[in-house]
Image (cartoon, rainbow, N blue to C red; front, side, top):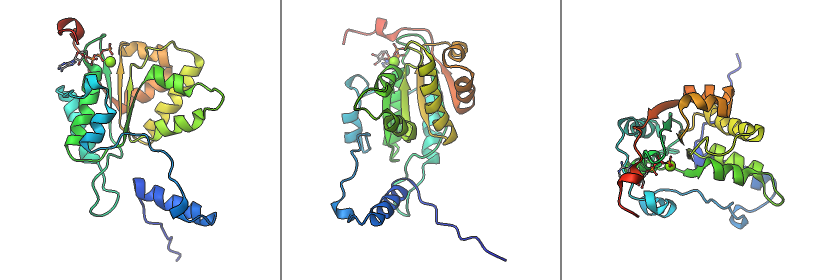
Length: 234
Ligand SMILES: Nc1ncnc2c1ncn2[C@@H]1O[C@H](COP(=O)(O)OP(=O)(O)OP(=O)(O)O)[C@@H](O)[C@H]1O
Ligand SMILES: [Mg+2]
């Protein structure tokens, strides 16, 4: 009987480095001479985390029970890429935070990232508003929007802020579908905020995205209070 040989499974950076070493060896390039691609994603520990956060949310503390529960689940699911290495966020559930303008959604999203980092796990993360993301991904001369979409789709933790705030179109629907479908398939934790009522997300994003979001996210509905109106000017 034939036994199947299986390659050991590698995770995260280790797998990437090994793949890169194989590619370089195949091209006769000494890895020491090769420059690594720019890595602009913020990476813990805390000082790097703070540098990457918008000042308004640098002190954000997540206190919503569902958000804190999400932090625990994602921390518990973190995996060490190799023996003795720090555990890294890999897969996990996602959150869809819905509420009126100023309700505190973005505050909870950044607070959740801070809580994750403080818990000691490593986390590669990115944050973007949906409108900025669409602007970055618009095909234009000199920009590799496919590569950018792949990078955002693959990032272990992604904040998509203000989903539904940009004008919808077939193109917006398609890009959002490709992004969400990728994160859905790979079970990558995603923090989404929106001003839209959850029922309106379906007509904005289409059935395919709405169906995936319904399965992959826990819904968090915020009290309809605009905190900006109740805080001192800053
Ligand atoms: N739990 C909190 N404690 C203290 N300040 C908070 C809290 N939640 C939100 N804030 C503050 O209230 C303001 C509005 O919060 P935030 O920007 O998170 O709202 P939002 O729901 O994302 O609004 P929008 O839909 O307009 O993007 C911000 O100045 C934020 O720092
Ligand atoms: Mg916001």
